[in-house]
Image (cartoon, rainbow, N blue to C red; front, top):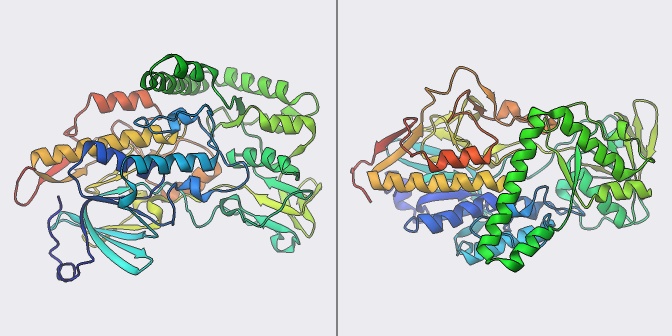
Length: 502
């Protein structure tokens, strides 16, 4: 546990709490972390602070039509509370309810402070504790914690990426970014152009078509898109025939194995995977859609994230003519729509800019060590979960080639093991030292997507060798967790001032 504060302001202010662990964020990773603390560190004093007024993170923020998971729910869900519904790909409200139900079942809800946004955290070497500053509904507050666990995701919640389109002020219709979808928009019978080709765009297009919009998907370049069934017949049979826990385990490992297999095949034989994906699209959309132009990317599979569409819904609306697709670069906005560089005009009443995210770690909060600012872009990431030379903290960062929760849950388990080890040995501080990381600094996320390239200057890096190399491989990470110990020679530990073990 952190010592009582030595700051006179804290001793005189009863509102300054003293916690063992502070979790920042109440989305998938934050609730996972809280549940793991409940399961594995029952004696810890902890709290969750959430800047928004509801649980769910991404799955509460995004409310555009058709919002759904972009990976299977059997691995996106929590392993200690398996997803039991028959839907492989679930909609946003169902995911948010699942997160909230899990938090309720594990007693997490009373520990969450909504509307509390972390603005900064300063580590005191003397006190072996973080002083965290927050904005709350009742005004600014400060608290102290021995371990700071950032589960606030990797993008900005207040706004998404918006390119500087020429003439955007000329458009007389409505411009909407999916990250902040308004409640009052009616698309029925309206000409809607969705700008983008990522997961958000391929979700929006069929959903808007079902709502009666005259929708066009406008993309600068194609994306790999793969159809997956909404429901898993094998999973349904396993749940009928086997005990629930065994069925859940088998289904979960089925999807873990499939994800690893397809990713490895994509990296080793990209031409084969590319050909198979494009052949499947060609069969799904029929001869009326130019697959070579609209669905044949210039990059290899998994250089960018592959998009999933449930039951091929995007292909269905394109084949039927309920939606259209255009590939080309935007020259600028016009009063009545968009003009492309090749001279084509696309009429629109509503333009949806599904143009991506703005990357941001720590929810925009600043870190400092004994009053000295920390530039996270100068740091390396240890085991995908800690910044080099920063004590007593963790970051929840998921995989780019598999479900977010797979990696975040491993991180939560590692954090719990680390905290218990420190208690057993009487340590008050753990800090990763990067002496063995190698000379090269590599991008943290190995994707070429626009939002990743834009954010690299503000993100930490990975090193050449484990434990500084961030592997996109759940099996390898799980093995490293199971067969390693916290005292691995990279983490530096320091005793508590009193040297006591708890």
